[in-house]
Length: 438
Ligand code: 9WN
Image 1 (tube, rainbow, N blue to C red):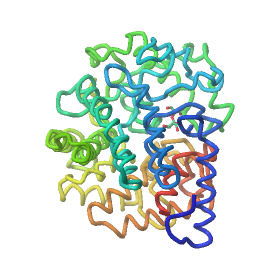
Image 2: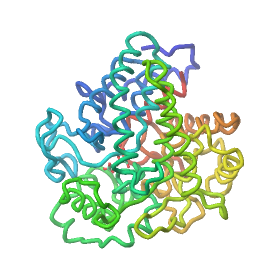
Image 3: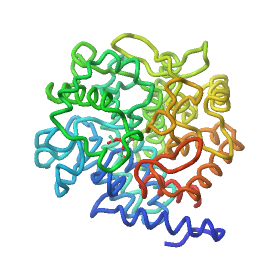
Image 4: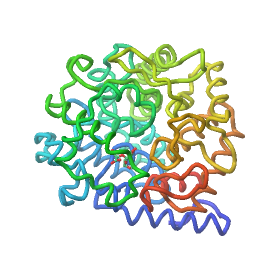
């Protein structure tokens, strides 16, 4: 479908190619993040993808969100991957056999993983509705609302380990920022059992360069943590004592808070009470500030609940609280200063990297340890605009569009050369480009 308003020739061609990426990655009732690396449905990918689809095919946007929530577990969790059981086990590791989840929600056994991902879906549902208003969208919101609330209840309840309104993640994959230095301290206490990994075959290394992906050492820990959670029947009881990895992430919890703000708006459309959502949102923002903010450095960090220690690493997740409209002004100013600093450096030439450029842990090629990711920058641009930093938001937008124009719809980008890395024809990159052009 055509752009909603006239575009320059360059942008017109960007619009067309972004549409082609999303069309090619569509599979019956969902969009795969990438036809090569990620052949199933991913949770937070579907959220970002739906926002782009809203501009070109609102029915597909809603279908994507709906099919994800149809796989919701009875306890409210929405799986981090919903497996396409028509795809061969060898096409993604760890696949359905590894996770071995029981049949439920009218699904056959092994239909999903037992993890979650950042709760970006309420925000996405609201944004799809705004971009494609009308009766059909209102009806979709009505259907999704109770499921979105059930997801929040699960995260704030079963995953509310600290009892402060914040949710804990039990695996780095749940953060969506898999190998971020933000987890290094917590992962140092997890034994890397390489022999466990030797029993399996990493599929990602057949499809992407090894120095662009997490290391084998990381994967051994990922598998150990996932196997422990699986062997405990995916139970969330006594996590701090029983489990290997229990962490509060500032990005995850900022999206949790943003979800409550979005649910308050959705509630008003579907005839529910917005007040409880506003209260929860306020609690989440307060707890993020009280627990994850380090006043000395003026930055947000992840908190390891097993040791009680804040991570020393400054990563892009520390900037995510900007997406909270009720973040106190003095703290907003500190986070903006961090984003402007040489560590992240907002500028027109390059979007914000996933990790502190000046840190020893910075690795320009390796996934979430340095490369530029479009979803993170899109969220930060929104947050900056909402707090009155329109200039910064515009700078990020220019930098993102130039980068994609130059390098293509990659999964992530080298933060110095801008070269595309990881998977090409990556869905959320294409979707968010459409949103920025619209
Ligand atoms: C594990 C699909 C997902 C994204 C994550 C990204 C990456 C998976 C992997 O790909 O993670 O979930 O196999 O590396 O880190 O954010 O949702 O695009």
